[in-house]
Image (cartoon, rainbow, N blue to C red; front, top):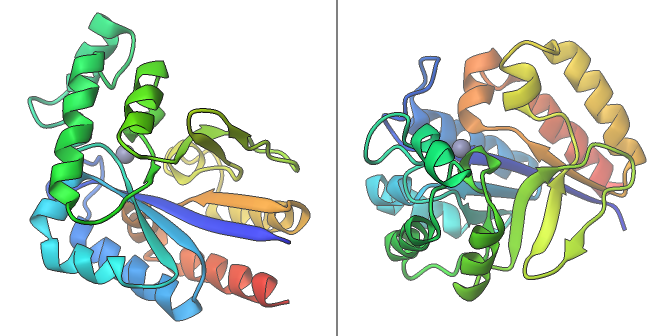
Length: 229
Ligand SMILES: [Zn+2]
């Protein structure tokens, strides 16, 4: 059976993007489109966004085709700008020491209580062996930190179910302008039709910034028609 999953990351209101975007507004529009086309979606959301928008995140948690996942408590930006770089220097991992990660994941759990969240994407894909162990112990089941853009994605099951992103992601290819939206759309749709399991990574903020959801709507439409055939 063919599977397709749209995923995107939600940071928080006030997150220092390079471009101007209202995170809450972007997420709201993204969720409406995903709902309209009824396509399977996982949104990886920071704990801080849950705290900023408790009612809105509760509403999203009730939508049947959207699942909420974790994206760290505050995307390494809670102490000072560039915390990730300091961590990389000190611990060889942007996500910090084992103790820092454990506290961050615990803080995420507190911010999202009483929701049961089992999927995770580390901000900047910066997980290491410590992250996997802590997530496993904290009841998480799946991690989405790896890229595997090919026709037969490999899903491994170790401590966590390791689910790869299988399409050229927006933050690596579209935002830096390595691919035009048109080229990306054509190549991605062709690859999706060949793959048994497709995982997109399209952030609400990027979809808003790049073309105000025009391409995102087209993707949802194609996914919806592919899955209904
Ligand atoms: Zn992120």
